[in-house]
Length: 136
Image 1 (cartoon, helix red, strand yellow):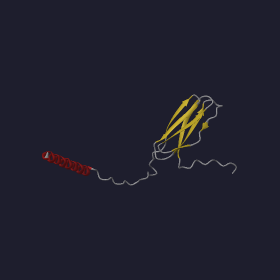
Image 2 (cartoon, rainbow, N blue to C red):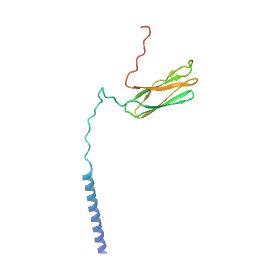
Image 3 (cartoon, one colour):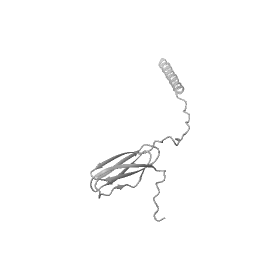
Image 4 (tube, rainbow, N blue to C red):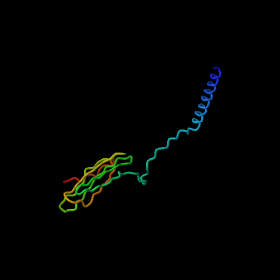
């Protein structure tokens, strides 16, 4: 009985010793904390990644644009629809802001066939083009 106690104690001592060695090896192998990189802004000549990725689907007389923005700046998108018939009115959607990692959907339609449809992009922090003033 006494031999069993001494055997278990020796086994437990070896297990604790091996665990301590393993932990010490992990602490030594851990990489040093990374240094903070300075934040840089792109130069005016350098084009910043910008603009939502848009997919336009035409089904009969209806147009839908699905836009996803993978970039850190908000993109203001508009859908423009040009109709095939001369009497059918072309249309432009209201602007929709698509934020970073966000999704937006725009719709438009014609009475008959659609000739073309496209999406325009503008940074949301940029002021929209001023409307002309009448009678000045």
